[in-house]
Image (cartoon, rainbow, N blue to C red; front, side, top):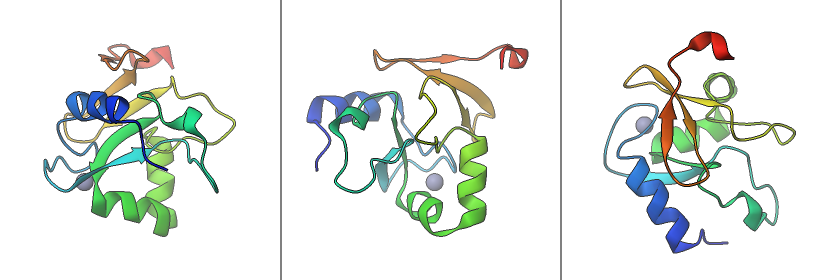
Length: 113
Ligand SMILES: [Zn+2]
C-alpha cells in the first residue's frame, strides 16, 4: 500500500538525510510504528514516517541489535506507544519531536523525558 504522495513529500522535505548515517541518497520512508500485515493507512502520517537509507531500513528489520538501538532512539515505536515521543538524529546528535504538521522541533531539555 503506497504512502499518499502529499505525506511522502512532507517527510522528504523535513528529512534531508538518513536519521541514522546521514547519507542523502538511497533514502526510503520508514514507518516508526510498524504497519504490520495488511497495513493501516492511519500509520501513513508524517509523525510516524521518517526517511532513512535502504540499508538501515533493512537492518532494523533483520538485526535484533539494530532494532533495539532503533527503539532507544525512537526510530522504532511499539504498537502500544504514541509517535509524539522524541526521535534521535544520530548525525546531528540531537533529539527532535516530529509534529503532525510536518515540522520537527528540537528537544533542548533532555530532562523533559
Ligand atoms: Zn543510513
